[in-house]
Length: 354
Ligand code: F6P
Image 1 (spheres, rainbow, N blue to C red):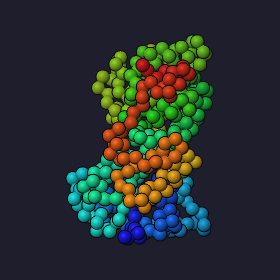
Image 2 (image 1 turned 180 degrees about the horizontal axis):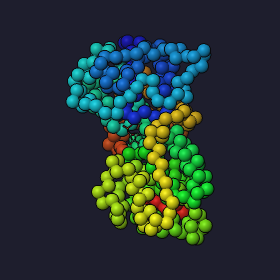
Image 3 (image 1 turned 45 degrees about the horizontal axis):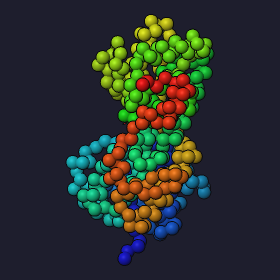
Image 4 (image 1 turned 45 degrees about the vertical axis):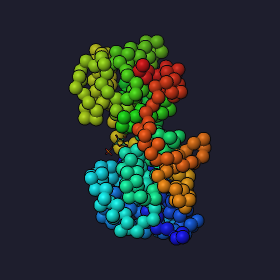
């Protein structure tokens, strides 16, 4: 039986901090433990279609002995989060075989992993998935690569905004990413001391937000407030201004600002910050590097064990393999409306809707 493998690795979907740390772990473990050849497929399925494979080596990226991949944001392989992949399945499978790959490790969010899983099934590939996304919406894993860094980036912004908000008695509206899930807003809002957190999973009322802000001022003497708004929230039932506002085109942070301004009869001084792609950049946190490294190592071991159609997952402080089909069935994973974090937010007097 052939034991020398040619292993492909690709990153797909929106980038996030920690992808390079995964690549580093996969390359190191596959080469030093198993003696395999590892090639990077640039720009995910686009690279496959173009039959591109970049040789990756243990010391290929060393800078005078420094190993930059562990703390470098983005992905050295490049990524795409759109394309016509599903219309070109047969072509991609042919290209995969032309590249003489024995196995593929794909790092992606639920959308990319669904496409890669389809290719695996039709092409009969040996494929192992590694979950990454700042949205934290991949099911059946307690951790994904990239989420912790994004949360910390937002918290850093909230810390900065709090002092300028307090100095000017302002209401700061902070729009954060997350697509249709509220994990990013909920985690960063609690950790960053928000007064209001709006997430797609929980309905809110503009009138209740205004009442909450008034209470903060009148009962507690707090003249400023931090309002974290997930990009995926829908317009409120009691919206007076924007009956046709649909995310992401209307700018949901601005919408909330205008609604609060309206219901407070223009008495509040309000500013909006849209954090945007700042949330996807930066140096990965220690936790993201740890998760990336453990995921990369385990993915290689799963390839060595002959597994396919599996995703590495973090459970109870360990990395396990779960069936990718099952992961995709339950993704995107949303915030449970009575989760302990939602209850914690409420207990701390944060308005989060009902
Ligand atoms: O899925 C990650 C994510 O950053 C979402 O939070 C956001 O809605 C989307 O990607 C932005 O995508 P793009 O980089 O294409 O603007």
